[in-house]
Image (cartoon, rainbow, N blue to C red; front, top):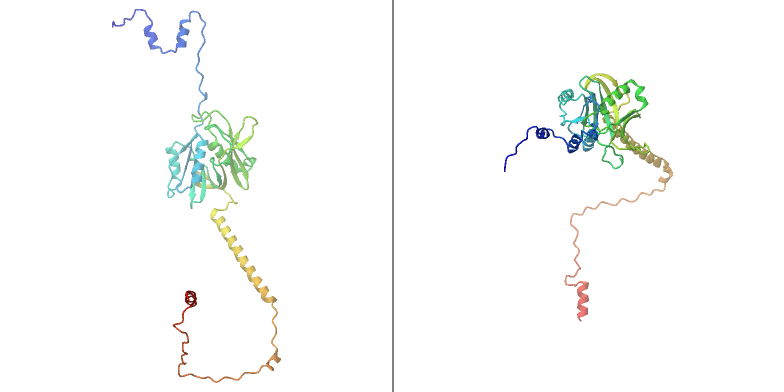
Amino acid sequence: MAAYRRKRGSNAEAQIRSKKPKLQQKEAETDGAGAGDEFTIPPPVSEGKWKNKERVLIFSSRGINFRTRHLMHDLKTLMPHAKADTKMDRKDKLFVINEVCEMKNCNKCIYFEAKKKQDLYMWISNAPEGPSAKFLVQNIHTLAELKMTGNCLKGSRPLLSFDPAFDQDPHLSVLKELFIQIFGTPRYHPKSQPFVDHVFTFSVADKRIWFRNYQIIEEDASLVEIGPRFVLNLIKIFKGSFGGPTLYENPHYQSPNMHRRIIRLQTAAKIREKQQVKELQKMKKMEGVVVVPHDPTAEVFATPADKKPQVIEMQPPVLKPNLKRKDKKFKRQRLNQNRRI
C-alpha cells in the first residue's frame, strides 16, 4: 500500500488538530453564505461563586444507641455541607474537639455525647472561638419511621423558620444565630442543589426547643413532615468552644438523674400510702367490735371439778392380740373364687 502524500496548501493538518463536532464543521463549510445556527453549551447549575465556606463536623462519643446513630445519619443526609469523623473516646476532654475540627477544616460542630447508655446530650459550637451550647436531647424520631410521609430532594437547601420568641430573649437570639450558621446550607455549595423544597422549624414550647422538618408541596404550598424530629432542652451557653465562662444557665432544667429519682420517690410514696390505708382499715375493724365486759357474778356459778390423782404407770401397757387373720383372702380373690365355683 502506497504511503499517503499530503498536498501542499491543504487544510488536513488544521482539521486533525481542531476537534470540532460535525455541526460546527458543517457551519464552517457554509460560512461563506453567512447563515448558520449557533450551538451553545448551557451554563452550569450554579453560576455564582461559593463564598460562604461553612463546614459542619457531626460525630459522637462511644456508647450511643441505634436511635442516636440514625439521627446522626439523617442530619448528614439533610446537610450537604456536613462532614463525619470517627467516634471519640469518653475519657478524652471536650477541648480536643477543637483540634479535630481544625484537622477536618470545619468551623462548626455538632457533637453527641452519650451517658449511662440512656441519656443523650448535644453540643453545638462555633469552633474554635465560640460560643457553644449544651442541650439534653429528648423524644427522638428518625426519618425511617412510618409516620413521616414527606420527602425532599437530597442536597436541597432548606428554609429556616424560627419562633418569635427567638427575637425576644437574648440567650435565644444567640442560639438563633448558631442554628442559622449550622443548619443553613451555604449558597452555591458544590454538593447542594439549587432547589428549596423543605423547611426547618425551630419553635419554643414548654421551655424547650422543638425541631421539625417539613416538605413544601408545590401544588397548594402545604407542609408534610419529613423528619427527623427531636426536642432540645437547653442546659448552658458557654462563651468559648466546649467550655469557658457561662453566659446563660437554664433555671428550669432538671437533670435526668433527678427526674428518675423523683419518679422513684413518687412510687415509694404511693406504696407507703397504701400500707397506711390498710393499717387504718384494720384499726377501724378492731374499734367496731363490741367487747362484753367482765361479769363479777359469773364466779358464783363456777363449780370447780375434783382433781384426779396422778397415776404413774411403772410398767408398759399390755399389747393387744392381733385378731386379723393372715390366711384370710382379699375380697377380689374371694369373688374370683366364687365365680370359678
